[in-house]
Length: 255
Image (cartoon, rainbow, N blue to C red; front, side):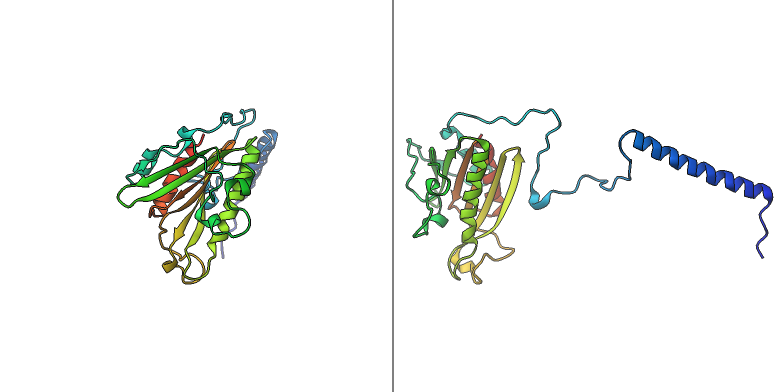
């Protein structure tokens, strides 16, 4: 049989429990008085990653809205040759010569349409204001970029979303036809983002869609920076990392 605690021990236990309850009530009152209740930090080691690798900007109370260029884009806003160099590609750029190519299909995907929207103007209501072409001399493969500008950042967002939707239709193609893979997306800052879709040859399309776990060979990127938006199509056989690098560089350069 366990010995019965002495009267002094029982009195000490009651005092200890009473002190603990008083301490908890005091902490709760302090937390409520400060307008918040402090809870254990469940994100030790850093905040959880954003979905799909997106970086979502935050703007503190009273911070100014992001500002964007209001002038029309020029060839200085096209993706730089250095971006291709950093992606491991050696190429040269053709002179722009003021050719905006408004009647050209905005990409291989829309170019295959026999009816419906094909050009940037068809899809967004905005003709391109700048057009650029690059060539990799060792393979003679090229890249093209169309750049347009909307009346407001919101209108540019709508236009870029329409362009992206127009290209996701090519994620499903007949077996043996080239096909786009899943779209990657990265938000660089408020109003600045890039989305890209790798292209797979018909020999890799045995199910009507892109194979999983395989690298693409080139692809297309939809870009938005403030009031400006663009489509960059890469016919060079870039892998997933190279295509992503070019898309992010082009989106940054666009502003």
